[in-house]
Amino acid sequence: MGTSPADGGLNDEQDPGPPLSEHQGRGNTVRAVVCHESVLEVADLAEPEPGPGQVVINVLRCGICGSDLHARHHSDGQADVLAEAGYDGFMRSSQRVVFGHEFIGEVAEYGPECRKRLATGARVVAMPLTRRGSDVHAIGLSAAAPGAYAERVVVEESLMTPVPNGLSTDIAALTEPMAVGWHAVQRADISKKDVAIVIGCGPVGLAVIAMLKAKGVQTVVASDLSSGRRALATACGADVVVDPREDSPYPEPRGHGHLTTIPSKVRLGLDTMDKLARLPVPWHHVWRTADAVGITNPKRPVIFECVGIPGMIDGIITAAPLSSRVVVAGVCMSPDSIRPVMAINKEIDLRFVVGYTPLEFRDTLHMLAQGKVRAPIHTGTVGLEGVAGAFEALADPETHAKILIDPSSRAALSTVATSPTGAP
Image (cartoon, rainbow, N blue to C red):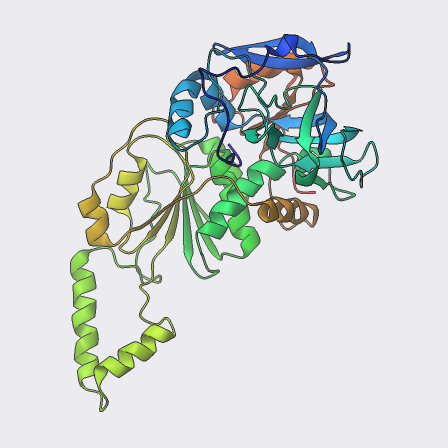
């Protein structure tokens, strides 16, 4: 999932609007993939109409996101959690929903009160949020905001960004998932000299790897059980790739200065005080000066958890070097537990991340256009009729990472291309 909607919306007891097939339109229809009670089927829906400040775009490509795979079967649980956080508009399994929040399209029609700065036919990407009255909804993950598994989708003009000339449509379609990776990297406060460790090389992990290298991080270690995903991690720029069944993803402390046990940290403190005691000046003045310039900051890796299954966070806390920063980007759909006493004694810095800012979204698009990001994660393209089969194919990590939907195509699963798309 990309951005998080603002507070407000609809809950399962409120009316999300008339069923998709009954939305008032202008007599025309569009083809779309509808999810209802976990079943995916192609349907003809009323043509979408733009409201004030909104734009209809013809969808060129739309990525299938892991959030879509989860929502197909687990939307009710996620809707309950988001309702607790103040957003009541997340999809429910009983509703008819059109997925799709990773998309590129062409401007087709402006609604009222638009600035109309882009010509009809201009290629654009857009952050997947839209207004409905006073509420804001996540496009493709709410019954109130049909997504881009369709020939057309409605977006907010203010969240629409033109695609730079020369950038391929397939690469531009990766803007949203790569922005998720860029946000995780930005939230990590990682320096170029820090060691980055990425646990899990699905689409989120691959995006994180690509963005770490785009930021200039010198050492990126990637870990995944799948040989196919490890190969994609290397293609995205990972410097070291490991199979966790054979090797630890955590580098040996030698050469990096990472502390791996509590006694080693205590000994370092005592040794440091022994040395400071020999100085002709008060030791606390020296320590404060060292603090001011960052010398006393412990060397530690920055670890990105990109798997999202129960037990992963606690496993990382247990195995990671002392003072590690753990950035949780994987979305675990089930309750999980950690041992706080382990994290406390190791002084683990734990951060959770989601979505991206408008600036991060815009900058990601331009980094892709400028060739600063290696993103060979596109492994296949399919038409609307092939979406159900593509969902099944994505369950095999050895075969696919990111499948794009081309609504103008009639391609089914048997014709999905499996050659990765390279950098622009």
